[in-house]
Image (tube, rainbow, N blue to C red; front, top):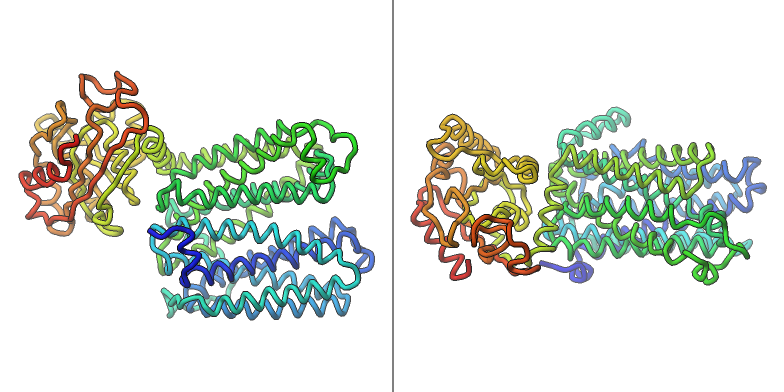
Length: 629
């Protein structure tokens, strides 16, 4: 498994990262330079008020995301993405020349046109950068690659914002420096883009639809076809609303609430950006290199908790001596808590956003991946506009900025609960992730034998009440387990098994109708290309030894023929744990094995239905488990 540092040394990732980083940098250099120029020198450009101009500039930049995202997705699915990336970089150089002409002619209209084109540049590149990652990276590298892209983007936003402000404030030569810097960044980005490996189109025969609005609606409707992907898009869009709302308030928050000056705004932005970078980069380690959506509820919890604490930590009145510089602001009472909240908001934001991006890339249909990402960009833009309007309305109604932070945090909790209720897989994966990292230390072997696509019947020994969760933790794909109906009697287990769409089965001779229904449902899942898990012992071991294997799994295989391989899975180290039957009833002696006890899971090579006899499977699982129960 390649680490993030390995990816940064490989041609299949580094040129894309540099191209993306420089594009985001240039966006923010020109955008912030224009905002600063229009805010402090508005009378020489137009009679409009500075606050109207800055909002107009923001609207002009985001408009292309609504108009052209659908077309951008079509282009990325129809043509080689590496070639498109180079063409976008050529467009970027042309945009910088348009901006230079706007400065030379002292024309606000031409400058706003360059800003619109810059938004178009970002619109076109969005589906390219996210759809190309699954083509060049392995599944286990997607989280690390997305983490680097997200961390790089926020660093580019920070550096571009600072650089744009500095260039705009450099006097009469400012416009020249802005144009020259933009051209230089774009040219370097073009050179980097030439090293991006080819990324062939998944659907080269696709007809580009000229009707922008119809295609936009079609893209969003197509994304809604995959429930998990669409709800992930809603989660991503909500994060951008939340993050954009925070960032937009930083200038007024630093000045009016904290009593800081311009450097205070930079301090807040830098702190939040560092947090996003740390959280994004930590995702790969916390998720063991896989797309671990269990981090999403953790991220949502942190976004709510530290958003509320930021509101509570904010001073009621600005300190004396305002405006304060960055160093003086750091020494102000309560400022350490404010900065801690900001950096933790960034960290948990990284936990929230990176797995969602990776999940969309992994589960979207390959032929439509770029168009799904285009739909994501449309929703992102829509959410950010709605968030900006809502924030403006609440602030105009007299709500304070800290109170706005609290409202946003509470809304975040409501949105998260809504998504998790509709897709309980997120919460289920969080509980699984929590279990294997707070109670056990899981060591896995042979995971490559579980197919990334298509059906397979996983046959596992049964040692404890949490075996289902342990196997889920080791597998990147959802598994539907066939479980004794009596296991559904406990409320917590009923939720967990229901969230994983487990199939309740009656013991042999107890309820033949339910038993046949369960076997039919498991067979149907295999025919649909899903993973199905079963414990052929029929119950948890009473003494740690393997029990006789029953033939329920064979009845499932008879229904599907030879289409599904049988994959043996051996658990070890769980006997004697809190959840096992050693000494009697499970869950009666906490910490019997202590915390972080080491457990193991080994996956064997696949067997055909004919090879998977009860005797042979029992022997294989016994050998794989060894002496450690």
